[in-house]
Length: 369
Picture 1 (cartoon, rainbow, N blue to C red):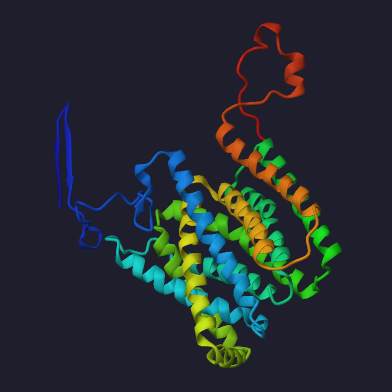
Picture 2 (picture 1 turned 180 degrees about the vertical axis):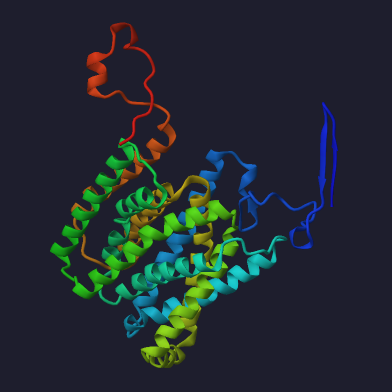
């Protein structure tokens, strides 16, 4: 029903939505961002940022500890894909529960898009978990931190983004620091395996693409975090189940975990729960601030995870780890700085040479590369 009154000065339009579009009057706007019951839209950008960062660090630090603890169990290393299957199952259940708690349950993102996102999610999480059967945990984390450059390239080719000089400098600092860390690790603990390197590299490529695809889909269709988690992980669960069934990898994994179900399934549940809470805050970061800043925050979290890994699990140590980590921290600082100062333009040397003397003290504007 559409009633209109039009005159030279007034225009009134009353539209009654169809049954499938009807929403309760107390429902928040679809643009509201709610994470674990917290409506982030009520806060300013700075508060939103600190809430998301706190959530990412707290839950993912516990997540990283549990992940290394699971793979420290004797005999579990060959079953990384089965752990990913359990993780996807728990994520799907958690997403379904959260989706039932919100009023608007409609799926906004097309199914074809979710099939692509699910495939990338399987790649990044499954290959990452499986690589722990061939690499030690700090090395795996350091490799995953290198996705900052692929994410930037993905932003350029997928979304047509342009990054400023500070972002590029941040990526270079992080990459140099991570390379230095890896060289130190190969010197004192040469535990590298070509299979593990290939697996984590493929996971890195999928991870670089998925952030940009998620950001584009969520902004284009105004989808909720719970919807993204439910459909991407439930479809991914089907992918992994079919893969394990076809490769005869499901039976041995079930037999192994049934021998000690409390440690295997119990750890997997806690591991998945903290990961689900963490991914909710990561998706909120992506939706509010973009994929690049989200990756910067998660990269900082990974650096802290490496520190805790050395504290809780015995490993060789060298101070080269410290210097390389400081270089990574510098890269994170440069990226965060660029996000707050991207409206200020730093003058180029040519500008300083050719600028008139009367304008030398004027405020510069933004420069991108």
